[in-house]
Image (cartoon, rainbow, N blue to C red; front, side):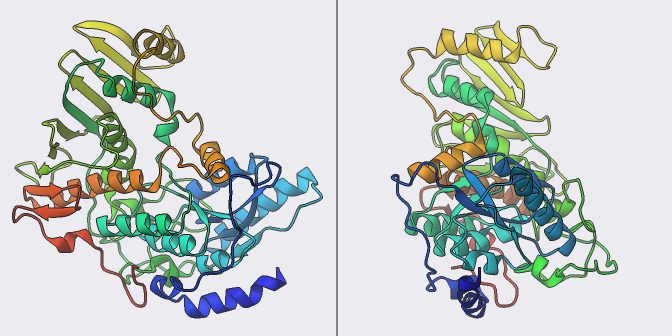
Amino acid sequence: MNKNRSSRRQFLQLATTAAASAPFLLPSRIWSASRKPNDRITVGVIGVGKQGVGLMHGFLGSKDIQVMAVCDVDTSRRENARRIVDTHYAKQGGANYRSCAAYADFRELIAGDDVDAVVIATPDHWHALITIAAADAGKDIYCEKPLCQSIHEARAMVNAVQRNKRIFQTGSMQRSAREFRIACELVQNGVIGKIKTVHVGVGGPSIPCDLPEEKAEPGLDWNLWLGPAPMRPYNSVLSPRGVHNHYPAWRNYSEYGGGAVTDWGAHHFDIAQWGLGMDHSGPVEIIPPVEYENAQQGVKFIYANGVEMFHISENGVTFTGTDGKIMVNRGKFALELKGVQKAKSLSNQDKPSLGDQLDAAEKEFLSNTPIKLYKSANHLTDFIASVRSRQQPVTGVEIGARTVSVCHLANFAYHHGQIIKWDPAREQFVGGTGNRKWLDVSYRGPWKLT
């Protein structure tokens, strides 16, 4: 570890902003598909709250991975994660075991050449800056969904990952669940005919943060938790005290997240985009509900091919075509063709089981179809396999960017109440609609987007 102290010190001095870090390329391992199969991929986990620790446990369970470092601005969460890692490897008693490093500042973790890949599980407002810094430092990246806080951030992340030839997996893990893949494959192969509508059920839009001031949490670097977000007093709703076992509500507030529209939307709008074959595109018109100010649902999207997509409150995704309908959600799948129920599994008690019904649908309708979608059985192992092969994973950065853009467009409609004309190829408002300022978020202090 001593050999890395100098480079870490330089990095922290030069990289007080993401922009400053861009030209400062740190030495990193040269990756190739010929990497020895028994070499472990070393990982650092940035953000070790509930989701980050969950992902960390997943990687600890892989013999292909060694977690080398953890990072969090909260001392108790950081030390808790370090103890979990140290205990895990101590029990294994491996000869190659090294004590897990713990950092308060992500830039210090990224500066070392002892970490090949990073896992980013911070609040959303940090995703873009950390991703860009990690990509410029030569790290592969697993980043939680939703991808980021703005459409311009999303494109900057794509550019950074591509120019550095990095592997990037967006944490929209429903693409690694069989029911969603089969549903989208049925849709793309025209099994239910020409698609007319899609109904996407997630919660409502974000709101401005209005939480009152509370006494600061000991051991928390509140200034660094806020980072590029506006300065405001501490509140435990945003960063719960100590180690906690729930998903904090920072995601409800526009300064740090996009409400359920981006939080759950990064899952269900992602499936809608997949089924429609829009992984590199998006809608061309977005229409707000009439009484948009307090609306929790009702935004309508129109795609260039005439498909209409509706944001509703009931959780799940439903594709309706000229010949039938498909409903899909986690552990749920239903297929109706020309008025006949071909499959319906909505609970664990249904018989035949979900797996049996998916088997039957796949055998009957997808055996000889031309379109075969990417098959991933596990989101983390898919990422690991991609790091080794250097082939794109199931939910690469471009997919994450396109999905979060749909989510942000929905929030624009709820927040501003305007009909929006959108050019998905250029990622620009057209027809005199929208405001290009909406495509960015303001950054505080020295933080800048490269």
